[in-house]
Length: 77
Image (cartoon, rainbow, N blue to C red; front, side):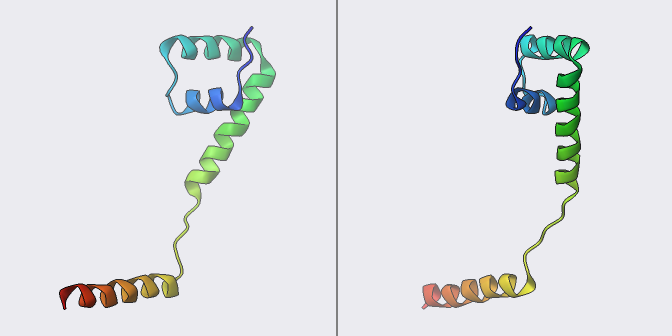
């Protein structure tokens, strides 16, 4: 049985493996409970990452807008 890395499992989760790799991983998952556990941990991590909502602070956005406005005026002159 092949050893699959976490990177292999991530590619599998994102459906970026070849048909041959997908078949090999699915076959290994049926036989290896530790591989299933690793896949479950990765799935949970991806779900948590997808749920994170981050946005910049208002002050940062205003600084960027002010900088852009200032530079736009200098370009027009």
